[in-house]
Image 1: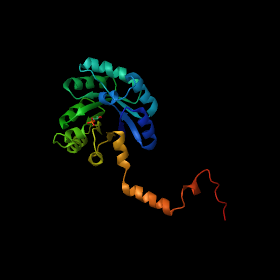
Image 2: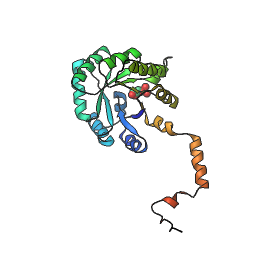
Image 3: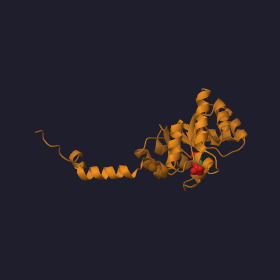
Image 4: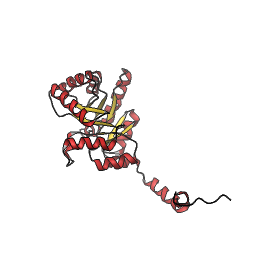
Length: 228
Ligand code: G3P
């Protein structure tokens, strides 16, 4: 499973791509609205921060398919490759996805809450589908079970569309979608850090530090000991 960052905060992105193996960044209008930079500057800035190797997923806001396509093409120019236009899985959105794929635009079908939405988006040609795990859990549904079914359906029908699981609030949700075979998970910075955290790891490191020779022996600013 690949890890993506679900944020538009450039400072956090810059730090976290150095600390974690991050495959890309996802945004949505809510996430972008949290930042103070103007939209275009922000999207260009995120691309400059993550470089040309990582994916950038930016959401369209129009509802009419023709407008969605125009918007996605403009976003693609703005964001640079590798780019994926996020399009919600409404009927008009699916129409736009089919048109976008004819024009060779990368697409992430988003706001996915059911298995059939995901299957229809995949048949429409979407490169990714983004099921919202925590939002399902919040309404007495089971987000991980939906992801599990979508992964199963894509395998069953030999579809190349990948599952980009989204909307997480805890480590267990992320772990469970990884066990279900989700290809990617996009997580907020705070949750990403929690994925790596364990108090026993910190305790072990502290113990090794106390007992071991300490870092300076191997550090580059210390002369190596001459051979005996
Ligand atoms: O990528 C979609 C995601 O941002 C939605 O997450 O936490 O608002 O449910 P959330």
